[in-house]
Image (cartoon, rainbow, N blue to C red; front, side, top):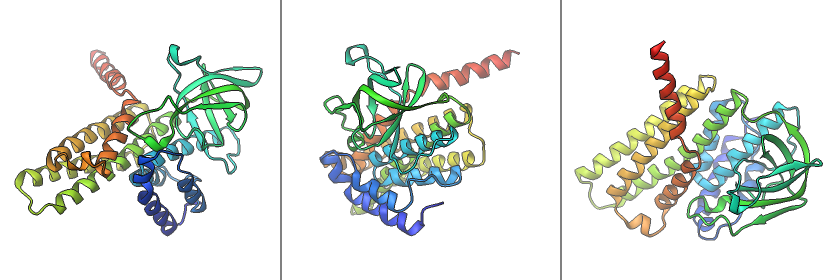
Length: 319
């Protein structure tokens, strides 16, 4: 069932009002997720368009909350696909392995999870997670035999996402799921993530226009920057409109993510030149959005995927 629009709107206003405080003193956003649960928003809406729109709005309110939220929806979908009831649990998907000096990549032994994962968004606040363990996708209870290393994640971006290093000491494996790479679900996951990026960019556009509107005059360079920012945001809108009426594929998800990342670079370049250093020096909404966006996009390393598309197109032209 879709969450009531008014309730969700009120929740998002509350999340946005608390974003600066969470950025200043990072902690798992328990209040945000209690409110989202009460609004019925932790159950995915029935269509991609509604779901991506909801992720985008949550991320506009707070990028860190949006990051955890889209991971929850990702896990929720995968459990349902395998016939497992997500119940009332707050969920995540943890896929990044540590570097050799950071620990041993997670592995399953005797129906329990051992080793480490990094970039574990929501660590300390989630109930359960889907964890990629050397090719296996396992469903893990996070309340037993799990240690959280809060010293690993020290980024200036996504500060309240609590994306820590997690050590599993024979954590109970509740189920082994089908591979994460199934289509169209893996491409749908990627687009859901890009919806979170888009939400952060919406916050940046809003902050840019508010900053420029507060200045005593609008010269042509500021007006040009504002126009470029609006056009970049509209490009993102058009991609999501197209995706909403298309079955997710790798080609679509790569193109959409690349378009959002490129639009984001344009937005922050234009915004920073138009507003100057003040919003960044003060750690205002525009600064938070830039930090969140740059870190999140970096985690996905899009260039190899775009190069693969190009190579496929070149090979097809030879046949």
